[in-house]
Length: 253
Image (cartoon, rainbow, N blue to C red; front, side):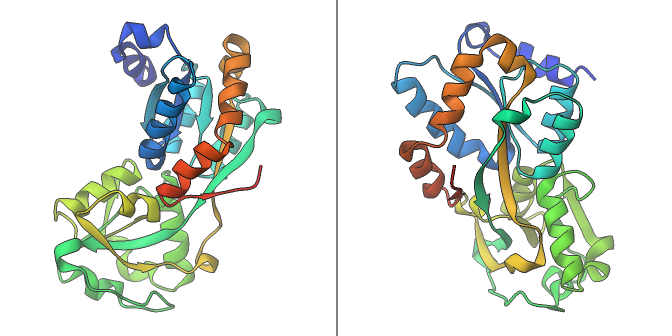
């Protein structure tokens, strides 16, 4: 219950009193860090950021965490935040898109064609597990379960999962060789030289991967002008270039 408070208190006091507080999905870590540098270079105060699974962040905001903006990795958790009146619906927009990929350790990469009925269990070997975000709550895991189900593969791997608390934690399991394969976003695979993309899941195997962004009720009450300005900045050519650099697909404003 008090996890968000612990996270916030662990931030430097100068940061707490300085810029906007942005809660963003773990897969946005690198992009938002770089965009924050550009934002600060334009004369704004440094961002205070918290990166976790969209589920964890939404629940923290709903319980009163002092975030000014929420950037989710899926529509579901933004919908949940809206249902709890934790965001300002009129500010909500779809920011970027992403792809879902199967990864393996770079040193043992064996490309595979991902299609209905492909033998994922064989890729895992006799004892290996599939790393992915927890399909009970983490967006990347939810997309993964949806794709595997639609491709008729879920029953063969359901008992062989290594569920992680967020997509970056799933990536880490494959980086360390603790899992022979994993399912993450294309952008996560792109930032790690320790993994390679074995295949990309067909877009029609899962719902479109969209990242919605919105001001929170806290942000509207305490930093409305600055928060609105940053939300607009996320749609500028400079920010879009950063998203593109990391493999995201900027969506039309």
